[in-house]
Length: 124
Image 1 (cartoon, rainbow, N blue to C red):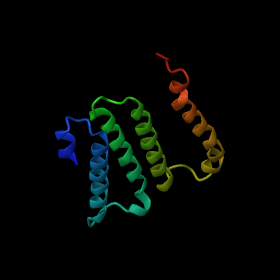
Image 2: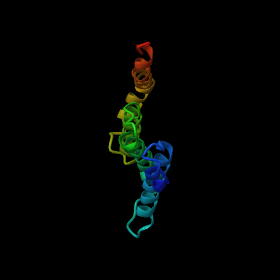
Image 3: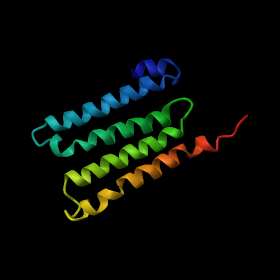
């Protein structure tokens, strides 16, 4: 898929994304297979971070560069890192019930910010 992306003049953005997501996921699984490897039961959010990194690299390397994908990449990376914090019990146990009711508010704000450019889109 990477060769196809390069031969298409960097226009095949989907091929680049699938290739990067597969490479990053394979790397995470390879790290889990080692003798002192990652425990995927606890480190599964790394796969979400990997997909976010693949989206970000696709947005950066594809032609033309797509700035709209950077928000999606950032959201996926932040979600994966948040998942890592929760699965590794880095937050005090009494914080999670306090924070959980605010998750829909955060999701609504992110969705509004994501759709804001479509609302104020210039008409030509």
